[in-house]
Amino acid sequence: MVRFWVIAIVAVVVFTIYAVVDCALFDRSRIRGLPRGWWIVVILIVPIIGGLLWFLVGRGRPLRFGRGGGGRRTNAPDDDPEFLRRLRDDAEHEERIRRLEQELAELDSDAPEAGQRGDDALGTDRRRPDGTENPGNPGDPGGSGRPNA
Image (cartoon, rainbow, N blue to C red; front, side, top):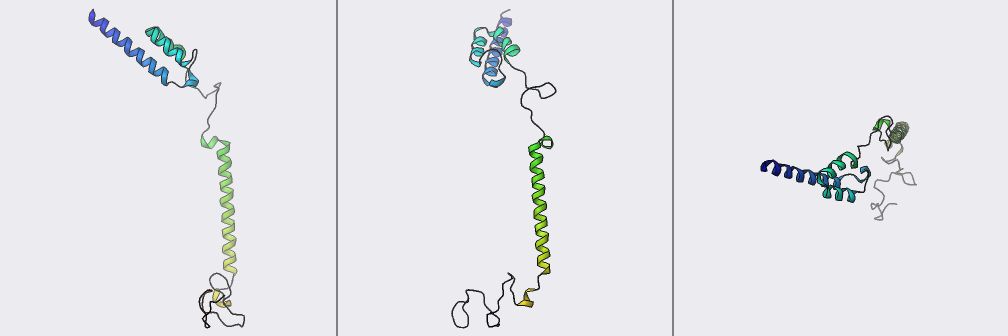
């Protein structure tokens, strides 16, 4: 008979500690009935009944998001209007970039070759005002020893 009482007391102590820790760590928005501190007092003063009351009454059920469920509802990404709007904006932006790159490529293909006009790869005319070629880059010393401008 002594073994039964020892096991029962150990079980009550373990249950009480579990209930207190659960109450202390439980989400504040889901606690029902009493404030958290009062629930801990009830669990400690009346160990078995307080713990049972905590698990049956004080612990709120998880929020449901089905029909009739209240609270904030989260959407999957493909159901979220803000996410879909951002995808549409990104697609429009990518399409705009693609069109601009295509126009730029068409403009590049329409331009005469650099060697035909005396232009370099950047499209700048390398001829001097007197019509002769300027062999150096701007800033390089020319034939007179002064930098070309």
